[in-house]
Image (cartoon, rainbow, N blue to C red):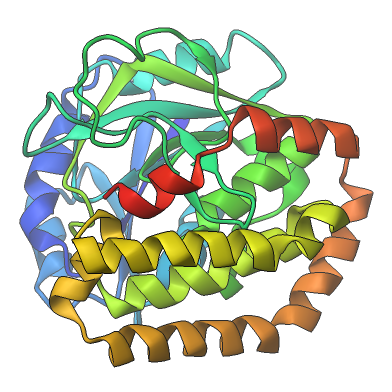
Length: 337
């Protein structure tokens, strides 16, 4: 049994294509749970009128964020497998079947990553699993590359994108739910690393294909995203990174920031895109707010770090191995969109 959980916030325009693609799945033993986060665009009425027999609808009165919204969906699920799916996606008919097939192949597999392609241009890769930088930021592997079969092998990756990810319910029962303090962005990084700390593996499944409208629910270059990405990456480092890496965090951040500043001057990377829409002061003040919020939550995150010691099943050397094997270069992180 599989539970597909779709979190929706004012995404009515995407729901038809997403849900119709799930109806065409070759794997039939699954339920669809749509958690609506206080939408005001008629999403709830649309689901009730068009998909009432297919979708289990949960209505939140407010936007509780990605983490808590999915937690509510998981609590109301019946499956042995949880499949998170963004509303701004279309699933290939084999998506569920291929993910379950790989997950069933090894008891140590707790997570699976999909092959996520651009909905606007299916020849372009959105991501095929996630990579990590030593200051806590993560990025999609293969992002914006042309799909030429270079990622067509089943292989271990660091962690899946929450856009289209499989999690074993057994793993989630062991490691706990998504951290609602994150609200949005890096929540999938948080739970992915937590799963790895307890000894679970993540596999990439190339035949499990999803087509994704990148940042369809929010702008890909918004101050909201900049705030949460910068704050949450600090919390990731505090919760999970070995102390020597954590102490070097400011150095890694300064290097990345310098390259991003270069990106704003040359129009390269996400920083260049942000600069097209916002002033230097808006960007600077957003980062200050992110650091203030991160420091305010530091005691809470440090306690969570200590609490995680009871779950940990891997050595520090294994964590260093991950940070090397699944690393993203600072240049790619800063200067690539």
